[in-house]
Amino acid sequence: DGGITQSPKYLFRKEGQNVTLSCEQNLNHDAMYWYRQDPGQGLRLIYYSQIVNDFQKGDIAEGYSVSREKKESFPLTVTSAQKNPTAFYLCASTGDRGVAYGYTFGSGTRLTVV
Amino acid sequence: AQSVTQLGSHVSVSEGALVLLRCNYSSSVPPYLFWYVQYPNQGLQLLLKYTSAATLVKGINGFEAEFKKSETSFHLTKPSAHMSDAAEYFCAVSVPNTGNQFYFGTGTSLTVIP
Image 1 (cartoon, each protein chain N blue to C red):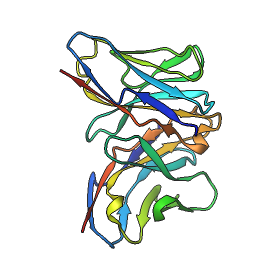
Image 2: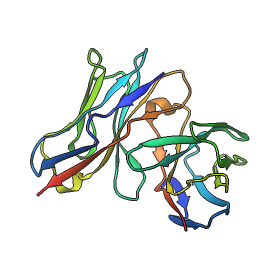
Image 3: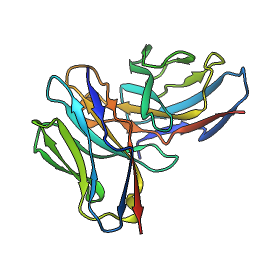
């Protein structure tokens, strides 16, 4: 079945460490997104990519970086510059008629700073 | 700019009672509207969507929502709550021809009391 795979499900980061969250989709979707979810704040957009080798900052991009070298993959790196990275991270994708069909979401990665 | 307001961050209903989750949006043009459900530590799953067809939209698990343009609302209802309905619910809006970006409400946590 087609879908989005996020890994790992749980991730622990030490202070000052960079970590990378994986997002892979086999839906042949062009657009991919990263959201951060904190209790009571809903979903906040970090980065998004409409096509390969191109991406744009969302509302809270500081302290994060992404790449889009392949259509299927959109990894997110949480850098040491992100001072409060503990959150639930969701990856999503959509096809060329995304606004009419909605997003498909991965199952998320919970990142905790230790 | 588009925005979504979900009234009530927490809603409690008794098992078998009516579920009503409120969503209001602001958009200068007719939007596409969505409801998503999220179970603990999981991604978001599409419940239903409105894309300018019938104003009363039926979704999965017995949920439905009605688009009311005059009230700029898209409230989610279910006639009889089940224990398995306990989850977080998100309303989302996107506007045609503005890119594949969605705007999410802050979510409503539904508790079902046995």
